[in-house]
Image (cartoon, rainbow, N blue to C red; front, side, top):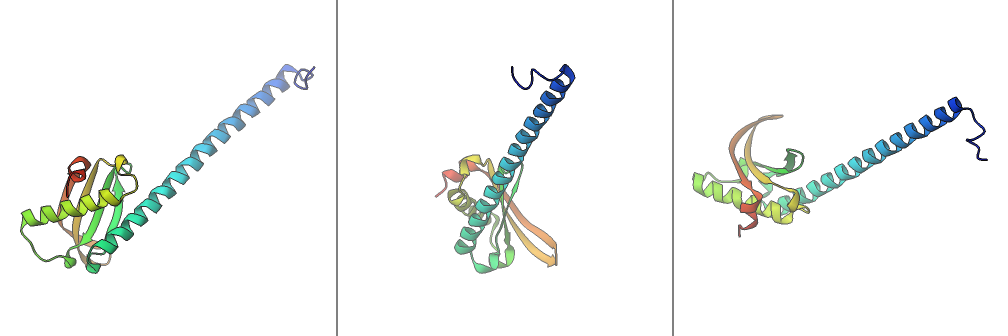
Length: 145
């Protein structure tokens, strides 16, 4: 006879309910831990990509890397002061090369759908004027030189 067999039906039900609640909490805790680990990995990947962008672009560009749409859309923010005024077609080509660099150097490019390169100009602390925005599907950037 097991220990549960000696208990009344009510006590057995309470123990089973407690065990079920504990299992659910453990499962939720496991999911929370997994989400935390994935968030840390994404942050690490973003920091490494930011470092690569910083090393590859002019110092004044001050690249910032972020995500939108559940980490499927990569955004590269650049300060316009690092780049001379250029025609729209040249700017688009420039943004495409920067986006292609980001895709090549990002650790999980297969998780990305698109990349936006955003040129911004600081107006005052915390306020930016967006000069240019170029968005490219990853498939287009993967084939870029």
